Image (cartoon, rainbow, N blue to C red):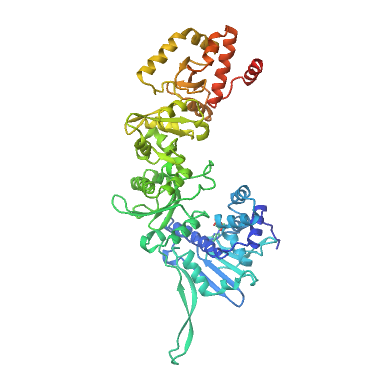
Length: 626
Ligand code: ADP
């Protein structure tokens, strides 16, 4: 029989398991039990949908056997089993090939690496090598005639050979390592340890996990003496966590369940457990993760909740249960109202499912509102992690959800260094202020340096910092909040002045009309107007936009894939009427005026965070002046 080598990635992971310093080696058991339970699920599901399988629910079980003398721990199931090819494919190559890459990118401490990979991904079957120096897997696929034995001591590959086995299913034998100074491996050969571990990690598994347990009982023959009685027991309660009543469940149980089921190594930030009766009857257990899932920002990320029909999983990721703005939510829904045999296609049109999805959406929104009111710090943390999603939600689908989401979004502002809601902003507005002001830019610091900020600040108005691309689009969709309109302080029509002030600047513009027209001509169509402004404080120039499209929106729209650079903001060059530069311009000859105007325009572009059309020319002009 030829020894086969593990694929490179698998070998790395395996080495990590064998030499692991991970302190929770005990998790190997829950990994093996969870695999066994999946295998039972698969066969059970087949029995429900395929008449040729004549097995009933009560036939399925997971059995654990301990042989202290030979130091073996055996976990068997009568599930779907594996063919020789499947043994090769599933146990010879690591399924979660992404996990090692993830590890490399995210940490440089070698030991921390191992621990986070093991904790984060569970790493499944290979975790058995943390406690065993040799592992045998005997398996027979349902409907197959032959059984096969896969065997490995980790380091130097594995073998597969045909063998005997009556029933379909899988038997995994772990040869437990000898004790060493760091680890009492023998504990995994004690029935009470195994019993404890099953109760701790696998209690809700819906199939009985049985084992022979020994108990000391009074000897019926000799009073005062005890004998050892051995009896097979079911170790788990088999009640899924979400079916238990909330009062019965400890926070650690919710967290453990989450980490195990949804492959995260941090506890969730928030747990929502709800039992709903009415139009639709269902239990839902939902989690908001502490951090975005590692592939959250990749195309591969699929949103969705696990879907169960009366305790039987019918779909792993039901996308229709979650709106996009809650795509980060993990969890499951169990409802007796759904048919087991429902196909993916039919499910999309299922009336019951739609009602459930709606109820879940509402529930999450309410929970977030509660968090915002009752635990501000937690909400801000949540918002920093997932808030972008909510802002997209305001904008998406033509603003269909904007009213439901508008009180959940937050922005940084000039008020303080915390985030503010729109409601809070409006609450702080003075009676004389009727507009919500905002400014866009890369970050709060850069925005606060914009020339336009000075005048708004002078009036004592608070300004929201829009630093996410979606912000302005979301606000445009919202149109107003509590009857207050929004205004971009970098828009040409920003109205901060009294009537008298307006009249004064109007007059100045008229008086300088010739000069301003010449300047506009000098810019050769790059701006729609050049104006004198009274909003610039001590700064000489700025660019503002006229009409619907702001500078930020132009940037965003043109950076989108497939954009044809067609969207242009209509620019207005504003020159500070009070700045000495105006005198200089007035006294310049035509040639100089052209040069100065172009310089002012270029610097205004830089201030607005826009590229220069011709940086070389800009630099040449400056050097010229010097
Ligand atoms: P995961 O369970 O996350 O896919 P594992 O490494 O634990 O990763 O297992 C790899 C694959 O081996 C499983 O996806 C499954 O197809 C198969 N497998 C493991 N244990 C069993 C079992 N007891 N019965 C049938 N198939 C199994």
